[in-house]
Amino acid sequence: MVELILAPIAEKSSKFNHTDSWRILKPEIEYDKCIRCMICWKFCPDNAFEISTGSSIPSPNERTAKLEAPVINYDYCKGCGICANECPEKCIEMTVESKKVI
Amino acid sequence: MQSAQRKYNAILTGNDAVAVGAKLARVGFISAYPITPQTTIVEKLAEMVANREIQARYVEVESEHSALAATFASELAGIRSYTATSSHGLLYMHEMLHWTAGMRLPVVMSVVNRALGPPWNIWTEQTDTMNQKDTGWMQVYCESNQEALDTILMGYRIAESEKVMLPLMSMEDAFVLSHTSEPVSIPDQEEVDGFLPPLDLKFRIDTNNPMGYGSYSTPDGPFMELKKDMIESMKNSKNTIREVTRNFAEAFGRDYSGLIEEYAMDDADYALIASGTLASTGKYVVGKMREAGRKVGLIRLRFFRPFPDEEIVKATKNLKGVGVLDRSVSYGSSGSIANEVKSSLYEKSSIPVTGFVAGLGGRDVRIEEFEKMFDYIEKGKTGNYFIGDREGN
Image (cartoon, rainbow over all chains, first blue to last red; front, side, top):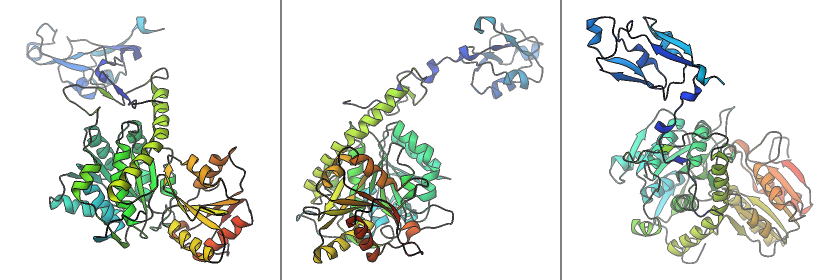
């Protein structure tokens, strides 16, 4: 007989639940074509896109170099490919991630 | 009822009585969607919130699913929360019923038992709540407006007990209780505060300490263990129910005698098991038949979940026959209560059990029909019978 109840609560939040192992195809942004429209960031169902202002990120021109850029957090990206499908510049490529394939 | 019963100080409908119960329980959050015959419960509570008679947040939503989702969330934030519904509204809550119980949240909800369509019918029947028997909620079927009020207070004490931590639904029969006025004794707020301490939810949401609530479990994760714990807690709740009912009797002078109530059972040879207001008619018939020298009694089932199997075995031990009256249907099987009674008695007793289904869609179950049921029980007719239909059964 249990004295106190067991509740379905994890001490850590779902932030610690990395879902990268689900991925077979990996999205990769070709930054020299990326116009920083952030449509990938908007459509990602897993909030796996972060926003970076780093100047070291390659850019198609000087104007876009001053803008924030989308950066994929691969800890949470499940490789669904929605970003690649939505990208108006077709600059996100889905590549087979051989190390993930069993 | 004990002799120390308090004087009546109000005349309330069942729905007003449960609204007063929620107020006395100092609920801090109410969310509901109106449905006949529940509407006047939440109308009354909305009025109390608007008049600042009760320190609670009242949230209007667009559906019963959302009503219980909002109630779930506020309870998880550590606030004693309340909702009420009926019939189709309860069915619409079904998914959230599992979530509330699975998340171990001690919500108390009032349900007014009403038939399910088609055809549309607003009168009383228990199929709506019998459909929810596997959701992990405790279920109480009330017989009077007083019991409906008192069950809200006892309900929170039971549900919030550290050994239980499961939600509870308290039922009233549509119109027969919900819209019918009866004398009621409203306890003082101070007395209720003494009986029901504030909720202290150990695992409430804390933004400074984020945790994963109901997040995820693989087959190898704690899923089965969590379910097992709910089964154990539901078992443990029987002792808590007996204890809280006793404490309530000591504090307020009204003794609901645990999970079942026995009426004229001391020397009875035959008995009928009934619930809700049907038990009241049953008691009247038992009284009449006793005057005629027939040794009959009645067992009123208060709790259906957890099912009072030990109580049923004990109460039927010296009987020659027992009948079970269900005001609900399970197509392709017999009455829900009848099934549970038979299952409780299996290998523990060999008395014949007769199942009755009656009063569907609010049809009156008349004295003659109760007498007919007792005749069947006395004749040892086993099986299941449909009572009170137009074919003259």
